[in-house]
Length: 170
Ligand code: NI
Image 1: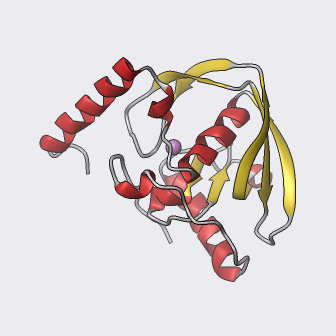
Image 2: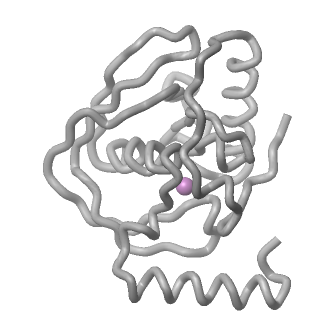
């Protein structure tokens, strides 16, 4: 099933998602649907709140579906270690059309559970580190614009307000 992507300023994006407790068929199906919905939107990461499901699960695939081996499911993820910094243009499917340079760790280690509930740790560098941080933020009710300067963030918010008024933010 394909889900529409929830956009800023929907409330579900602002709150911390509930932990995943049951690792069953339904969860696996949700993860599959999240991958499909993310691919359709041409994204490399998607957190459950972005499809209106306030649960601590996110998916990442830097190949956007080109290589099934690169699919990563993160249940109840936390970033346990970071090092270095990188600044690159970042965007978000919930803020379509808006990109801004965002400072992130160059390297991030995420600890999470897989779809069977098994804990694992994975090290991401560059874009993968960025994706781990971006998606984990989502699950804690945080959007990438919260990492920008107040000036830049307010500018983006104002532009979105204008789009909403003009009916260009469906
Ligand atoms: Ni996002």
